[in-house]
Image 1 (cartoon, rainbow, N blue to C red):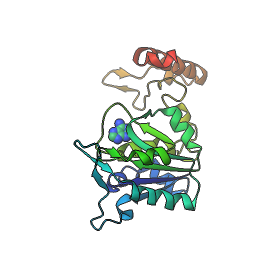
Image 2 (cartoon, rainbow, N blue to C red; image 1 turned 120 degrees about the horizontal axis):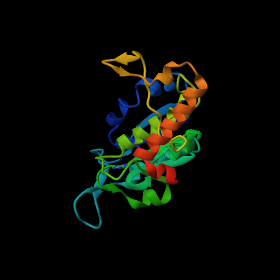
Image 3 (cartoon, protein in one colour; image 1 turned 180 degrees about the vertical axis):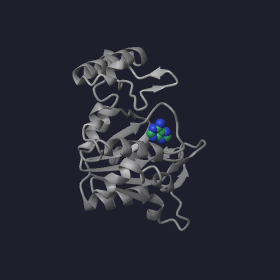
Image 4 (cartoon, rainbow, N blue to C red; image 1 turned 90 degrees about the horizontal axis):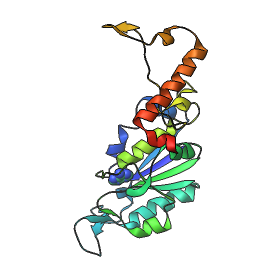
Length: 225
Ligand code: ADE
């Protein structure tokens, strides 16, 4: 998979996507991430990428020309399955969307900034608008990093243990069961006996029950779906 991210603050994306599973996926050629600075495509001598809104009011708007230039440069090189815009008024991001995106070949993510972008970009290029929650970030970069991270880890081969992404919380609309590791006892706090029993069938059943109980207690809305 190839992900191209368009931003006016590339620095915000460097650290979150250069570590751990994501770095390994890149090293193993499972995923490529290309970050493009929209400013590099500005013809303004000060590399300005924003301007006042025609409607007036506070807040600057991202101009369309430099964004059109990057998008058209990239789409002339390859076909994109989705051109995503990160914005608080987009569709709520969830595991189902991550699963759908993880089987795509090429994805582009445009990070919103300032007050927003010229609506004509959304009308003519964007195929999917995504919000990571009902709150407002200073820009869409952290949202793009969250999308890239959650998608790349689902690509077969990205995780050390192939089955582990399948047992995540939300993957089957249930939260994960509680997890324990050594020591089996610490300050008198014991790991549930069943986990030490070595009976894999019983352990699996216990985990299923725990996952169900936890979901019922913490996220009953998931069971209703
Ligand atoms: N940009 C600013 N806030 C955002 C959010 N909640 N989700 C996605 N992009 C954003």
